Length: 167
Image (cartoon, rainbow, N blue to C red; front, side, top):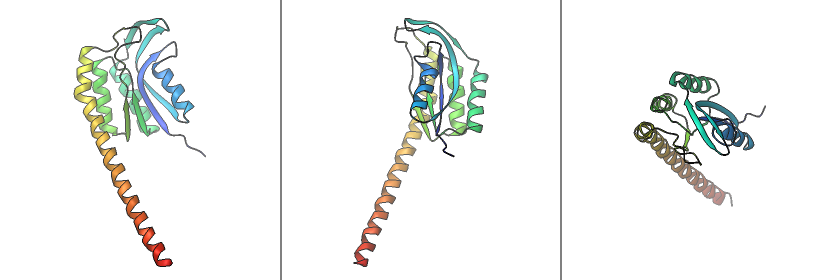
């Protein structure tokens, strides 16, 4: 049985389907992945603009993330709109707890129509809590890629010597 890679999207919900969780689910599915989600906020919006944003309680966001991580074990997490400082802390805690292999942070701070979607406190907390975790993950992945490339070169070098001996 073919297993599709699981991607967890942590973002807001867009009732018009053009952004947020809905857009992430469509994109992940179109690329052959299995989309899981943790909703951080619900928006009232359409193609004309955002009318309102309602944050989801931090314990509910944590519960969604933990339920997905404990069961589906995503290979990657994509983080979108986080408009509340407490939810930033929840996500940061979960990144530390689960240490996912890949994290993509695509902040949505202002809507296309110009409505601010994040509090200033949330922005500052992201700079302090989430970005360092992602930077550390990036450094670890770069080191892993470099190590694998060196091993591959060493293996190929060994193969070229053995083929010379066979001639």
